[in-house]
Amino acid sequence: MEELQRIIGLIREKWQQTHIIIRGDSAYSREDIMAWCEAKKKVDYVLAMATNNQLKLRASDIIEKAKADYETRLEPVTELMETLFYPDEELSEAKKLVPESTWYRSLYYKTQKSWSRSRRVVTKVSYGSKGSKMRHVVTSLPASLIPPSLLYTNKYCPRGEMENRIKEQQLDLFADRRR
Image (cartoon, rainbow, N blue to C red):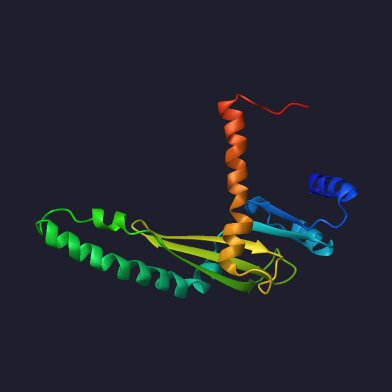
């Protein structure tokens, strides 16, 4: 928390009007960090958060929609494969030809103990040949400003790309932390 405050302070010394978006993994989706960002002008956050039973329950309808969408797109591919190959041959490869179906949902959610208030949570559900995958991010950015799919892909996902560039530096160029 102190390091975040220090870095934001340094940015504010030079660029007072810059809108800052904090992106982080689930270790950063803590009350103290979120409340601090919410109290600051032009400081927002998009932070990963772990799946729990309540979020799974609230996403059950989009899990079913993603599954139905994937299976609808899979059906003509499977039918075509059945016309090209003998029925006793393995047709599971057809599933790999159809891309995952991805759905997003935005909702307001409050943890039972750790959060002081409800916050916007964006859920991403992907369904494909390996079943369903679910991810969540919590954000201070309002739904009126950015829809769930764009928030996830344009605001949260670039965090992973930055980490990939850091890994490239460390692994490919043998870089490390120098002071």
